[in-house]
Length: 186
Image (cartoon, rainbow, N blue to C red; front, side):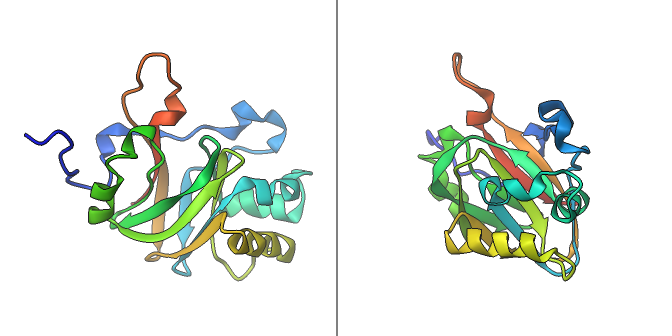
């Protein structure tokens, strides 16, 4: 048997864990952020939260309400190097787990690379492209795309749920270093 066998699928639902509830991390954020994204314009934006963080305060601003209604914020770890965003229906994946550095080629064979994104803040915003996006928020998203800390991806319309794909954590390491972010079509 090969030492690093090629994965059979882009993600393994047996390893899926629900994402965190932001009200536990930030009680002042105003509302729990759901883990469901509804795509109705065939486009999803993924951006480092550092570029839009100020628009979420105060939490009753138009942009903050829009993000809480339509977006999902997912915590990760700081990552200055861009990682690929892979698509192979029904999964969109950000392969962030440390142990995948050597195996990333095998994942790229299974999934199509549809963009790259880095994460200086340690959190991503996943937000569908919609016509009613507040202009200040849209302008900040565009700025993130220009700086290559965000990506706009074409995926089929539908309902998607966001998960962590959790791998075994070596003793003495942190859990978030051994997880991917997976968006699964429902």
